[in-house]
Image 1 (spheres, helix red, strand yellow):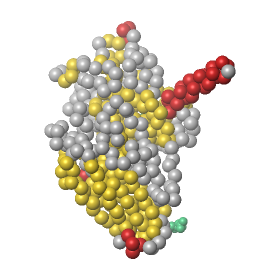
Image 2 (spheres, helix red, strand yellow):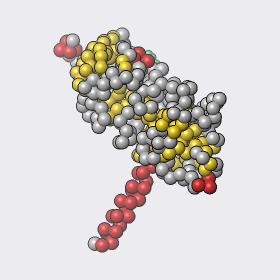
Image 3 (cartoon, rainbow, N blue to C red):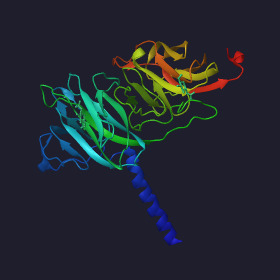
Image 4 (tube, rainbow, N blue to C red):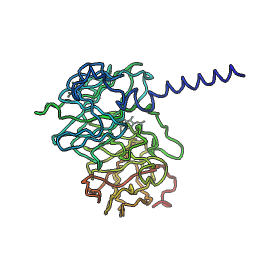
Length: 373
Ligand SMILES: *[C@@H]1O[C@H](CO)[C@@H](O)[C@H](O)[C@H]1NC(C)=O
Ligand SMILES: *[C@@H]1O[C@H](CO)[C@@H](O)[C@H](O)[C@H]1NC(C)=O
């Protein structure tokens, strides 16, 4: 009896250890463990292995929350420490993964200087040549300067090295993105069901979200990340879309939704198998985040030769309406695209972009289309 209990405890512990890397912060992913006093000069880290679990190269600073830079106060979202990557600096960490599976990295970033800043996210080894993501940080979406970004990849081998690199060459070498909280999530591959021809239509599967932050996760466009962190979907616009959760935003139904936050530059699509001349019915919810995003919004939907526009008037307090779109397939594969018609800014003077929320998308084929027209 006692032995069984001990065994059970041991099993639980090892199960937790194995899980901690696939779904949550990387070891020392919040940088709370810092360099020894002998391995830091002012804020500059002087040894490559000084930050536990990480290997650094170039001009990397270890920043304490509340530290001042000029007249700017640096605030760190999780815990009390973060790192800043200067020109061409990088941090990397090796992780054990399941070969062949898809993973998504999520991290918090803030710009610290006025220039355009970028981050280069990559994993190695990688069988796809030049498979890295250059994520621009110049557009701030959140009000407090921090944004979370996701980037997905396939693990080609059981041990991969995750690298975050600042490819910038600014006049001030210390200018560069501030990084905090690097997490990883194993992405499952949701299946189509009898009730929904779309994969992951309710967006419930997606990148890791930090429970203690309320700014959602930016999912970069396909041109910056060809493995979408929201399985089944493609962000085929120029700008990111935002992945949000019902704990911090009003997601009409379910736990997760997508905010189309950059007008027509924010769109999300899925390609589905269809039968030529068959009629399909798409249903979905359009709403607002309940986060001071006020105004007249509209979501446009395109499929085959058909399109529709669903207007939505947001008071910024959260709400939604359901919409229906009927189309006739003209090919054995149909791309279904959602985009936001207008740019909207938050009414809190932050200048942050925001937009309509899309949720619970379902697609079915119908035998008696008349009933739906
Ligand atoms: C991005 O990072 C990868 C891996 O570190 C590197 O090979 C590549 O040259 C970098 N790309 C740019 C544009 O800096
Ligand atoms: C789908 O259509 C393309 C071209 O129209 C054709 O090459 C392909 O074989 C078709 N696939 C199926 C499964 O019917």
